[in-house]
Length: 274
Image: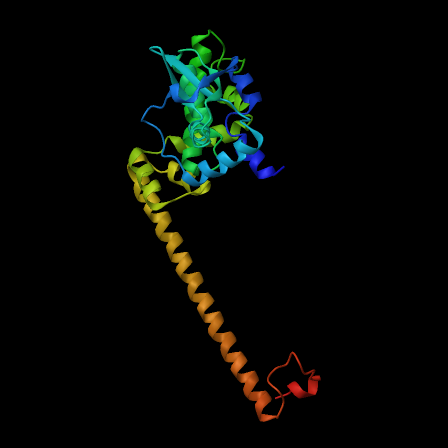
């Protein structure tokens, strides 16, 4: 069995994370045509759809999609690519988890689903972790649970320990995500427009005052472009130098009557003395 297809088929929230988030529900089969997809979703990736459909056709659906009943309709919560693959395969029914009509739980599903995508940028990854942290904090608070570790109020760490435990990541990763996610809206816009996808660079941007962060993004991009240009110049220079050395060697061999193809002729050290 193709390992890649197994991994592709198992898209979605890992079962242990579902358990820690309290999101496990009984599974049922629902008619594919009866599942409604809301419009506010990311565009489908055709290549992923084809690969996922091939995987599901070979080994079946390894991770059920999640739906929610809204006004007598089953609305898709997570698993749009899996549903699209099922439609491509002309499946009549698909295995689903039906989640309660709970906004926090609903949002947890959607954000957690995105968190485990492998095509997120550093900024998107940080925003997903921070959104999960806030929702987990709200969920625990609504249940009357403790969102801060024992030993007194720690407002700066609210939800961090719990989020790290739920997601299976380090507390430091949650803190870094919280810092990056707090970057100004204008700076985030420039990050997306200029394609800045480096965690250390984004953390450096976050250290600047909010009104200077967009400019900081542009400065980092300009610096990277300058470094790239210098590297390109060095590469060109090295290539020219190598060509000049090769020309001198060929001239040396021609003057002494030796073949220029040194792969077919062994020369002793005396032949190379100019």
